[in-house]
Amino acid sequence: MTDPESLRARSRLRWQPRQVAVLTVVWVVLWGQVNLVTILGGILVAVGITLVFPLLPIEWGGRLHPWGAVVLVGHLLKDLAVASFRLAVFAFGRNMPTPGIVRIDLRSDSDLYQVNTAELVSVVPGTIVVDARRRSRTLYLHVFDLPDAELRDQVVADTLALERRVVRALGSRAEFAALDDEAPRDEPTFREVT
Image (cartoon, rainbow, N blue to C red; front, side, top):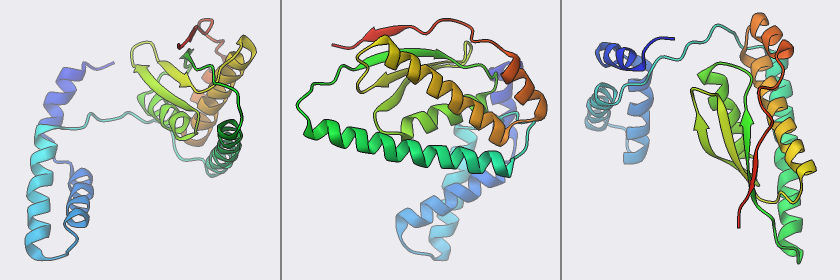
């Protein structure tokens, strides 16, 4: 892997037209009016931001697989509906939640897949990523109600399945095979939050 500091130094000097365009659009939307002054001001602010806070390049050797993306979005919508229903039932019930934190060691070795997995886990109500470790590819999830080891194992299995769906939607065939061949690295750890 390339040293992040040398990447950051090279990124500062590199023109980033997509980031400038997106930041300019955000600037114009925030001002709520489209005119020459707002657009030029947005471009100046965007160039300044990309020079001061450059984004590191993300290496991606895969491609978008339409069927994998459909499966990923379909599962996400199902997870959103089920989790929302469970939280609504919990809100009207009399039981107190037993929150917990679970460590999950991801099996892919890509920043892109780790970030996408963390984002999709956090979108679903009842779970949120509280820490992500880049070097070890570890996510720490806070789970709203985690009363026993069986449910903890289910959270781990669901997160690893989500990671697999992300790789199937965005990865290369070699990454599919590597993910399917690799066994889990460690037993997940669990800590009850009081």
